Amino acid sequence: MKSHDPSYRGVWRRMFRSPACLLLHLSFILVIAGGIATWLTAEKGAVRLVKGKAVSEFVSRDGETYPLPVELSLESFDIDWYPGGEIARGYTSRILAGGEPVEVSVKRIADVRGYRLCQSGYDSSGASVLSVNHDPWGIPLTYAGYVLFSVAGLWLLLSPRGRFRRLLRSLCVAALLCGAQGAAAAVAGIPAETADSLGRMSVVYQGRIVTFNTLSRDVLKKLYGQESYRGLSPEQTLISMRLYPDEWKSLPILRIDDNDLARALGVEGRYASLTDLFDNEGSYRVDSLMRLPSGVDSRAIAELDEKVGIVLTLHSGDLIVAAPAGEELSRWRVDAELLYNSIPFSRLSFIILFAASLLGFVSIGRIGFLWRITVALVWAALALSVVSAALEWVISRHIPLSNTFDTLRFAVIILTVAVLMMRRQRRLIRSVVLLLAGALALVAFLVEVNPVVTPLMPVLHSPWLSFHVSLVMTSYSLFALTFAAALVALLSKGSAPRLRVFSLSLLYPAEWLLGLGIITGSVWANESWGEYWSWDPKETWALVTFLIYALPLHPSVAFMRRPGAFHAYLLLALATVGMTYFGVNLLDSLHAY
Image 1 (tube, rainbow, N blue to C red):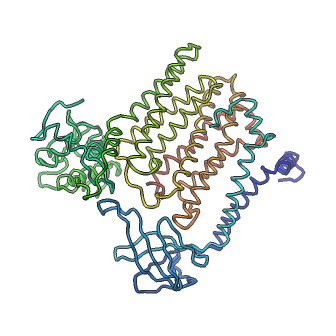
Image 2: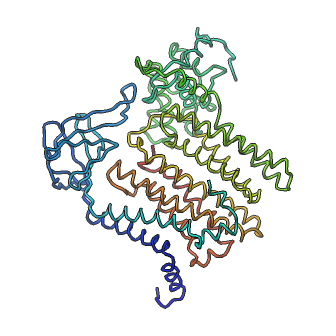
Image 3: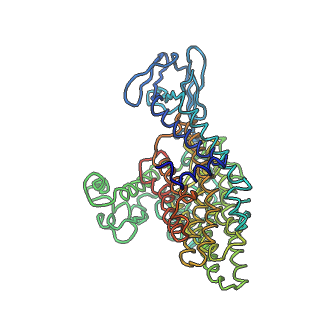
């Protein structure tokens, strides 16, 4: 790095001429300095508190002991259970810190003379386990960097003389940034009318109070992969399985998607019965596959074992549990849940979006009425996604952004809104975006085969959840738009220069929103786990994605000024988004909720 190099002089001159750019790079320096300070000076560990015993030190992650600033003693420890009393909604420790009463919970971190105490869990003996984090230098430096990044990024987006505003003026894309039924009437003495009426009954399921209709649909989808079994409703199927288990043991209801597993069990087709999984001596054949090398994917074996466990729990009577007295769902909430269950939102959404994409491609030849039909279909898909999210919000009583299905649906909403706002863009780009939205909606539909609308982990009961997920998913949606533009640009080279400007105008807000998403996630982690960064796979890949997409925003990178290289880079860059969102779920991650 020679100081007399004119390119570097130009970079430094432009940086000091733009206060917003200078603050942005200063924010990175502060964040890096904070990370180094945390690495060098922070003390992290855990302390175990038992009633009647004072503790004056904690154990680090390396097994070393460090002194606490004051003695800690446990006064009481309470668990807040979901209905049914099996899944914890949260836990709270009331302690004395140097004689002063302090409360620590999943939602509340206590600060005792600079030592942050976080409720991390408890053990079977009733002891409360608190994480301890003493980081007097790293957190202030890092948070200062976060604030500078937020301000500088917004300044760059709003500055009238900034590059982003020039891109908007050249493209006029500001609008983008503003905003088989009843074949059998009865089975084993269970009339269809009786089964349907029981669908409104309130039961305990995954720690929540839901309708029996929700439980039976989710269980049947989990076991069989469909919402009906040979013309029987989910309620009929589960009630019959519960009352007449012997008659169901030989019926193929357990779906097996792995061909190797089916061959190892000697099962023909995609479905197995309970009798297929036990030998003549009554031994469980799946267990031997789990213990001995078999050449079969362990995840497929575990999934089948989970299904067998569900069936056996159903047979024992432990799966269907009536809601405790006084905790039944209100009539309007039951109606909302039944309405949500009766409409195949995700199936309709991906079908409509694929149809809209196809019509969009056909209408490129300027057949006006076809494009009007396309727009109408996009509005229909958007309405389905919004109504689905609203109903789930009512049903689950939390913002629907806590699992893969919810976040995919949110991305579909962002992309469909983007298509409706992109009035000045070519129909080819908008059609490609619709194709991406349809693909995401299809993945959401496939994800929904497993039970959804489940209780939140205690750590997810946080207002930071909606901010963090919304920011990140919006940025990912904008990155997907640049992928669509890059694909069109490489197929139609004459439009590559103009689409380069279009993609750059998207990258600025997308990168800023991703940065804010990482920041809010960091603050959320600090408020929940007591540390703002742990190099979890999700965190690491989010940072990698941020850095990958930052490169095209630097004017000094010569090869990025060539439209062909620029668009090829953006095509490849989306792989980091895929790894961040999907790939890390295959790794050991705190984010694999």
